[in-house]
Image 1: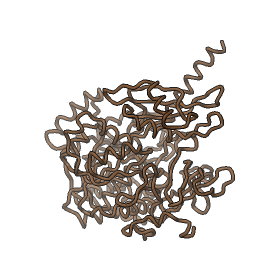
Image 2: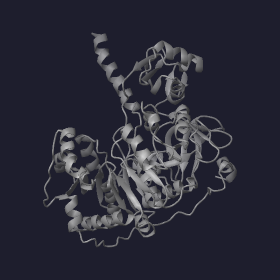
Image 3: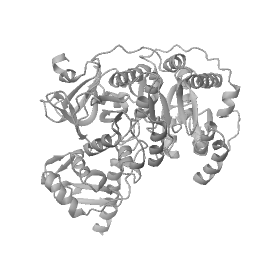
Image 4: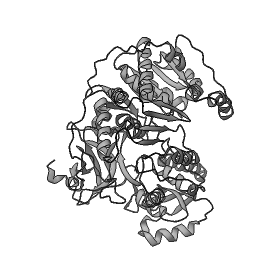
Length: 569
């Protein structure tokens, strides 16, 4: 692509290069480097416990050494099933240091989901929380697991929290799990005590060798393991550093709410913080009040998040009691950021909140608005350094005219190697030239700013009109009584599909279907206006707060299947 075909480059502030040289070093080397440069600086804060970069690196070496003693060799997969806690950082970098490939596993998985992922990845070991050990033990006989490493939240709590936590755990989970050390079950504390810390060097090719298998959500069929190399992850993290050019190495404090088992939290929080020598405030669970307290007390300057996180904070009844003025920059990802939310959050904090875009397959970020430069509200911004993007017509497979809607395709050093053991699926989305088909519908304007109108699978076809859920949701979010809104298409005998809205109302505010119907008709074309409204206390979400539109679609299908036999009887 000629530079003339990259109009977004004209928008770049002088501080951001349009092309960069990326380190061709294994990802774990950056933890080693930070332990040298920022050794005595605080790397982690966890529920009152703090660790320096030197301490984190030392424990990572102990962990890596123990893995090698257990037989981990280059390319072996090791699952990490942990929330944000010191162990999740140490295990991640320790596996890479030992030559293994990390398989990030959601701690909320049920046994069926865990069984599938462990079998598909062929993981030889898993690191899990003690409360998750019964699930792991149940699926272990069906998988390739040879060893289970068990840890607990209390392992890193300061006194007296470490003594009190088992009682809290018993009340919260109605169980107290006490795994014992055996030939195939290993306790975290014993590992750190008994490891020599001597790590045998592993020859890693950063470009070719995988660092991570990150499983996609599986909205169509079974989840697929996205193969990300060391180079993919290093490149995307270094792009992120360039984008946040006002941030200072060794000086920032980052709020780590986004889970590290999600690719966005892993890159934009964990890898970025390690590379920049930033202190991470680890939060294993999102509780709005806990987050507000942490911001006031720990004073984070960077706060990567998701729209639902910012919405929950803005709607907390005690929001005005807390000082959030330490926040300087936030990049929102995982879902569209409503303009209303962006403006309100900036007003409350005084910091900048911009929308970014990416996918698991792209490590994950490909586009973002400028934090300190020209931004366009409602746009996902422009491609990052060394990242190309085009809009393609799905039927003709040709580039569309400027401003026309088509599928967004991207290319860059952050694009995955492919799907694990799924060549056919890889070939469908990844061209031999490296172009990745995102599955998202969007367009580019004349200045090079991109807009996502929706997932191509989420587009609603009603009465011959294409309706993009995001467009309708943006209008609903502007209503003063709407806290959350999601739009889906439901079958309609006359229109083919019709628009249904799921609404969560703001606390102590009321709104009726008639009110919303009038509001929508005043603000959008009649064919886009929802015909059905359903009010709910909450909406189904992923661990990063992304609303699960597909779950709502499946619920509607099930309702339809249940009513059809009754109608036919």
